[in-house]
Length: 243
Length: 253
Image 1 (cartoon, rainbow over the protein chains, first blue to last red):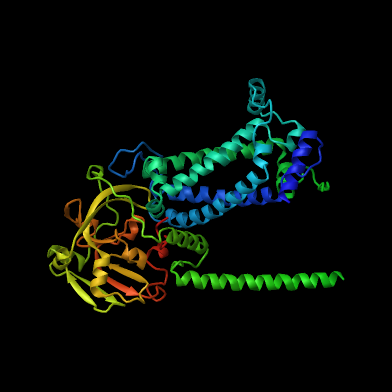
Image 2 (image 1 turned 180 degrees about the vertical axis):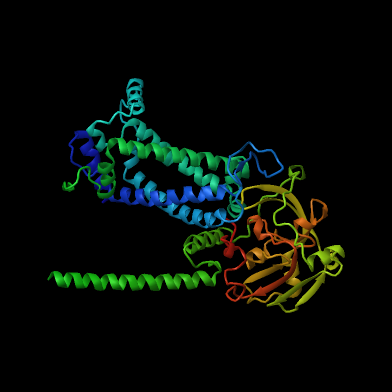
């Protein structure tokens, strides 16, 4: 079913018919499950961070040893890092299971190849440059963009799905003494436990930046219309889903 | 006709739901039998906690070992977390060089026993240079020397019915380990840190050292170990003091 939906979307994009099932049911469900888990991960991650807002490089680090940077936050012992941990790992399960479902179906249905991989000509300098400037000037995107992804969108989605999320999982695993007893390469390839923690923090920041820009772009393109599309699957309300 | 369809649909849905619930119940029984359900499996975080614990238990079924390091990698600073109890009997025992201290081992064991510190130090000693991370985020590498807990367990004859080892310290932070972790080759009763007697603030005279979990599972200021078949009647039933402070019982993360 997902297959036909993607195919319909792809065909419609190529022929520019402004009536389409924009997002498959699976993409919509995983998008909102991921939204819930991501918010929970950010909130709980911040809670955990408050227990020790200092960062180190290598295997070890703590008070009394040099840090690479200290965040201007209070040390809050006991409290947020407790429920933070419970919440973080529960949300991580939701995020990883949803992410696996999304990634596997996206690969099988060729969603990524069709809709994420930049189309012919999109990677040329002139096209990239004009897109970049239009974004910077917060220019409202042309109407047909509601039916496909622009190049910057495609590139950032590729980076988020295939680099930042895997990096978060990888460095997260590297911080588990149980997991690394079975798979030490998670931590050795990360450059040590504290390095993994630092990378985890930076990658989380990049994901938060991505979400902020993503939401800003949704607002620019029309918050109600775009959000409705991610809920109902259709770009404009009331139109029939093509079979 | 639509009434029939909808009734059939309801009946089918009902059967599916009942089968699903029964299936979950059976799965929970089987999981519990194989020791895959943590004591703090209830509440809003129970699902994530149980998934993590069960998955990691299955992954580590072969008794995987935490990474060990060279002596050159030992950290210069070993931060203190949870300083020594300032009250008696701990202060009295500390002042007496722990000559009157005894480790009680009881519960589901063939030979309940008391051990003095000297007796424990005469048991076959082992050392490990391992990484320890605090749940807060800081960490260090240190060399720990002590007797593997499994040696003491064999000495007292732990019953096959036992499922958890409960550790009682002189401070508030009592805790427990499941038997796979209690028998694990890197789970020590440690009395020596980096070549010296364990300093008071690091848990003197004896502390647990658990290499595959976060630091707070390595109970300090130990005086009693009790073997039980269930954690339901111990404390508030959630496996350790940690859940009542908001922290998970299992800390393999």
